Image (cartoon, rainbow, N blue to C red):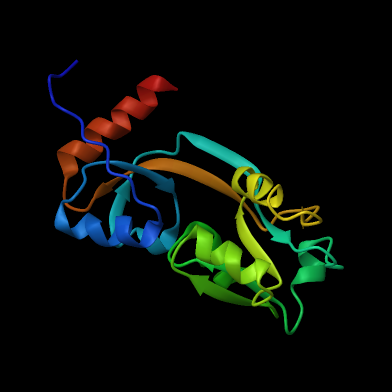
Length: 171
């Protein structure tokens, strides 16, 4: 409507998106709100919130049923570098460790190939991945909810104000 052309940029993983925020490669993105990202981007108010959205996919034969079962010494969960699941798990796991991967395929591969005892992501992605690994399943509970918001590169106050107003008007 504004006569401004849109160009869609596909980022297969969040690390490149976040590093490109400083280069003005993009103007607006939709990402999970996380305090660790606030030094890279400004967030509009959340436009989607989902409780219990982030969990872990475990491979066939795993005895883990809950996060308490999983958060034990010697357990490793694969997640994508700089993605919300990894950042949250690094802050919240007490005994298990996070195995960082460059992208979703690599994270899933770490679990599938026995280099991690689980793969962390949102329930939608995990359900799809579970279909490709018979006997795998999601834990019964979750390690976090998730809030999605429009993110803008830092130091664009007019754009941030416009996007925030757009979100509030859309609610």
